[in-house]
Length: 230
Ligand code: NAD
Image (tube, rainbow, N blue to C red; front, side, top):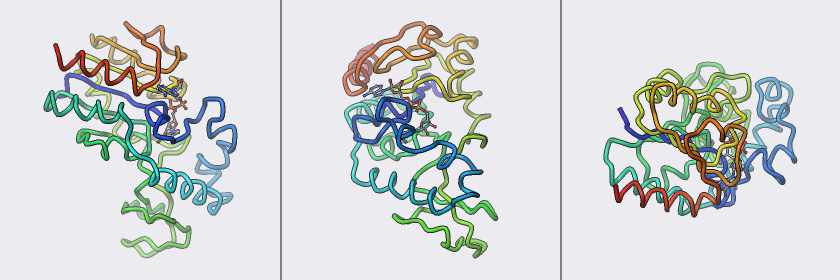
């Protein structure tokens, strides 16, 4: 089991040019969550939803990991087997920075899911709702992302990891989306030390033993250097 469990959110990828959801200018100010991030929205207008994620995928392919993603990959390389990243992000910037132990609790933009048979495969750059599933052949393609009202991935393993962690760190997440918002309490109850790294104080800052404020590209490399020097 990993000694250090790190929860990451949209704030980690903000300085790579990928919009966060809830900040001023965030994606929810331009799109209605009910339209593009719920199963009901997809049932009403699959083309709109598929187009929304095609645009997110195009942004991602133009973006690169930033100094914070790179620092987290250095931490894992320096402490083999001790670091687990649980991410709410659907981008692949952790992997592109070199992190290996990454669990995507809200799915992955670069993957497709068949809503008829549950098969998963690499997403094409431009997904279409008429794309046939490679397993069952039905035109039932959707992005492999977890929408509001759906159950996040890896939850049982995540709770096990939180219970076993010595240190829990949350980076760039607003603490407004459950169940991730409660991870700090889960880890803390089980005896972990807790640290928040975020641009500003969040809804849940008071639940952490320590909360540091600033941009991820500054806070994360500084914290990783501290950890590797211990
Ligand atoms: P959020 O938008 O609710 O909150 C982002 C947090 O990051 C805020 O607290 C903000 O203060 C902080 N922040 C902004 N810029 C920062 C920076 N440069 N450095 C450090 N912190 C910064 O994001 P969330 O908590 O991850 O919300 C959850 C949902 O948003 C998830 O479901 C996730 O799937 C989705 N999301 C993912 C992406 C992505 O994959 N890159 C992008 C947008 C939203």
